[in-house]
Length: 280
Image (cartoon, rainbow, N blue to C red; front, top):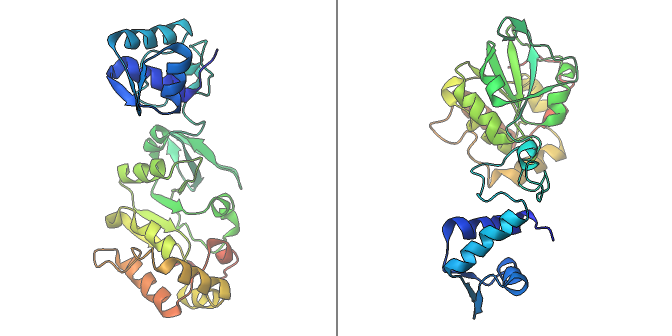
């Protein structure tokens, strides 16, 4: 007999919390029916001290951890318990990870950090906290992040710039945002020119937002003149108004928001790739 992660957590909570009853859900009824763990009374399973001891014995007999982890543990830690898959309670492989690319002189101690073209590093936030650089640049989309060399119009201004991917279902957006909040350097934002993109930029530490990475306004207006751009604006405008309408936002974002309202259209990062103008 083996238990899945939800069953293990259920037993651990019985041991730690010693409840007198639980709702008669699937897991509670399973242990009641198959292990006589608790008494089924109406919509509830009732527990006595003997049942709490039984839950402890079940965990110990199956070589399972007795206590619920305060955080998701590593697979190596999970593997210490013979009755538990190393994946069952462990953190996702990219938990606590950020993706970065380095342009110009970025250092770890006295060693230059080099990311070859079209590649990136996945590192811990602690690593990110110890990088020496001049600027941080948040990039919204992974494809753009991977292909920054193809955006030849971006001028890094002879700075040591760490580009950091905003994140997705694998690389947490929270880890990237928290790291930027803990750093002190000015921030550049390279996002889609649409309501959602400007809202992402608006979530950054605005006092340090130095630059929006966008083609020059005349070219951006030209790039925005598409049905797809107008569709993006219409789809996002009703729920993503935090990109520039707020009086407390950055002047950079207010200016971009005004242009976007004038155009009632947007431009994705992918469409900006072959822009020939210099960045704003």
